[in-house]
Length: 87
Image 1: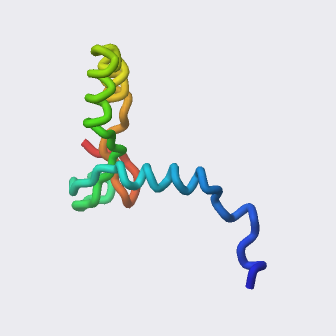
Image 2 (image 1 turned 180 degrees about the vertical axis):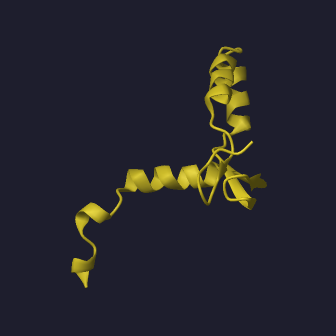
């Protein structure tokens, strides 16, 4: 029974926490995917606006530069079925 789970197939604690935080911060909506030719669930990585605002206030506005760059670089909506970028 214990031979079913080899060491290389298990995730470490850090990896599990990282994936859990990614799942919890994702935003989701319904969009039309031209590649799948149907309405699908669309996902994009999210961010905590409260945390960003707090950091901006604490750093007297300097963090807003990082916030803007992060918003520009953040990937858009992706189809959860075919992983193509949606408009």
